[in-house]
Structures are given as C-alpha cells and as structure tokens.
Length: 212
Image (cartoon, rainbow, N blue to C red):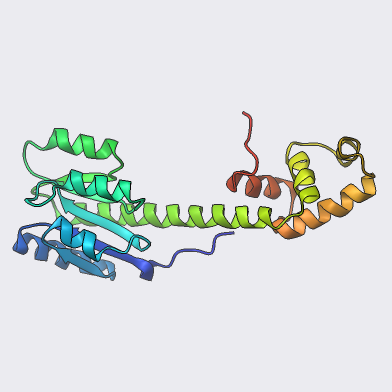
C-alpha cells in the first residue's frame, strides 16, 4: 500500500561546537551516500531545518547556545519527528537517559568507533523511513475511507466487525443484494483484495479499532 519514502529524501543533520570533531563525523557519514549538513550551533540547525524532510539528527548533548535536550524539546514542540542520536561525554549518563525518555533513538559516549556511529545512523534512518511509510499509509487509508458514501461506510464498519451480508441487510433495513452491491464498491474504493486486507486498511486508517 505504501508509496514509499526514497532514501534521497533523507538528510543527516550533525550539530557539534567542535569543528574538527564535526568534520570527522561528517567524513565518516560519507559512506552512506546521503547529504550531510553541519552546524556548530543548535540555533543554526533550527534555522536551516525543513520540518517535512526525512533523515536523522546527530547532536552533542552539551552546547553553549542551546543544549541537545533543548533542541530535542524544540523538535518535539514543533512536530518534527526526525530521530535524534545524542553524543555524550563522561558523566552525561543521566541526561542521556532523559533524552531517551523524550524520544531519542540512541546515544553515543565519547570516544566511540566509526562503526558504532554508522550502525546508530543506519538504525535511525531505517526507523524514520518506516515511520514515514506508516504515516503515508495511514493518510491514504483515511483518504480512501473519506471517499466512501455514508451507506458504504456503514457497510464497511459492519463487514470489518464480522457481520455476514444477511445480518448487515437486517441491521440497515436493505436487501442482501443491495448489501453485496455496496460491499463490492467498498472493496474497490478501499483497494482491498480480501476481507482481511479490508480490515487491515480500516485499522490502519483509524476507521476501525480491534477489540482484543
């Protein structure tokens, strides 16, 4: 169902107030063949950030203008879901744990190996890409549901609830043949090849909630 999220849409943002360290990280990330943007201050990142872009963000936990936790809070407040990887120094464990509780995907303690950085970034990019795919699928499922007529929506809700055509006909005071007609249109508009796929799309779009 997903339209997909191309890797070329992903950008890696790196923030650190130590220029040599910033340059070293950027060189390491070149093997991923993705754009890498460097910032020496969190405010610079905020000014140059496209909130709708994909990718991830790597930031030092301690910076002079706005620390990493402040930047993370700004991202959360503005609905930016870029995964954040924190770089921490000795004694920053408590702050790093706080960052994880607020949605950071990982933190790296200095000094770290290049492979550790690459593994973290690959994980973050995969998570962000999967999250965007799911969000796209949810929007598409909702759009399909909104295209249904009021009667088709009633039929859909009863179908995914497990009701047979005869039961649906009785509840809606229409003939089984009319139910079959509406059901066919529902399947076509929702682009579902089976009842199980119809349920999956309905749940994905928030149209129907499973009661486990």
